[in-house]
Image (cartoon, rainbow, N blue to C red; front, side, top):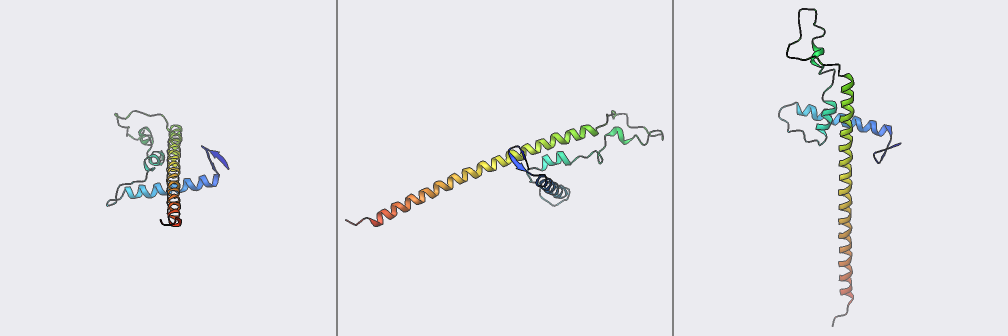
Length: 146
């Protein structure tokens, strides 16, 4: 187990969480692409879409689109500027996006934990009030009438 961001997690737990996130993302992405369905409301969809939504293999830079056609009488459009290879940049962007997601997840977990603590305190106050009321009623019941 390794402690990350205040949480003790194992590699298998991280792997399971990541696979579940990917599955949830894919399910929501597929749902978003079909008509007649409501909008995606999963709170992490936008962050996950930044990480997983654009893959270099499915959206290559425009400078690479025409590289295989050069020399065959087909030139790339003139309004497209050549771009340097983005393979390292894409990985770096994914790392930043995953860091953003991890931070968003951590903040959500902290918020939920704080809400739980507040709810726990409220319930404890309710129990104390009920116990005080029960004690007061018992005191009145045991008091002789005058």
